Image (cartoon, rainbow, N blue to C red; front, side):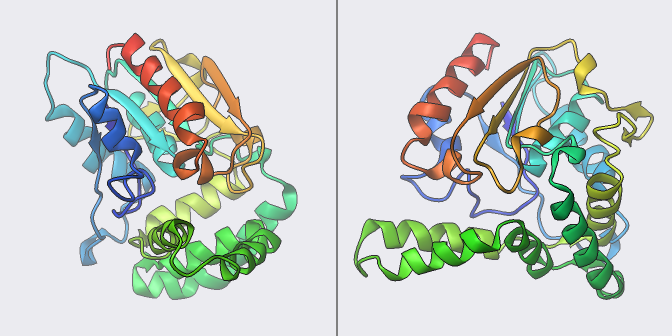
Length: 275
């Protein structure tokens, strides 16, 4: 089992010894790995999302046990990338968690806001050769600004020495300290996916492979949430099996209900398919 993500550790899937989906899965007996993409270098500016798959993820998968096809589990944009990899090489099964795919499932105002943000940031990002985390974070905040304000207001009411404070700080450190995207990956994300919905219209390609997850023959699972304001349930990829939760984008992974509602059922699904 291999879990792609496009943000460096500390990651929401491995925040701490107490709050780590990947460590918990390994403890259950799964052979699990969390992908670290590293920081983009000076020569990586034109590596788009497909390039991350073809040049980084696929070679990594091919370096694993050739007698045992991997199971891919992808969270958020990592799920989008996992779908691209699953169309490129044989995998035993594929699961996505809160992964965006059908971008016309995002509210129109959200897509318009993202397009405006990118139009303003693109010239600077082009000069830098990458998309800073600050640009990505401002986009996330714009998805639900009222909830962001409430989140920090609630934090102010917590006792200074409480476990809740520690948990909040760890999540915020993860959310704000990730690696930048390459310029080409950011451009593809904002223009081809959010605006043009090439994935949802089955027009996205990675190399010579057309990416059509509805046609995958291996077992597939898409997990979404009706209360996810970052990746709405309507944008879920059209995979064979669909689970719908009522937990937030991050809460489904690190919240108190996560182990019972997501971790344990996911572990059973992985065992069922050889993971």
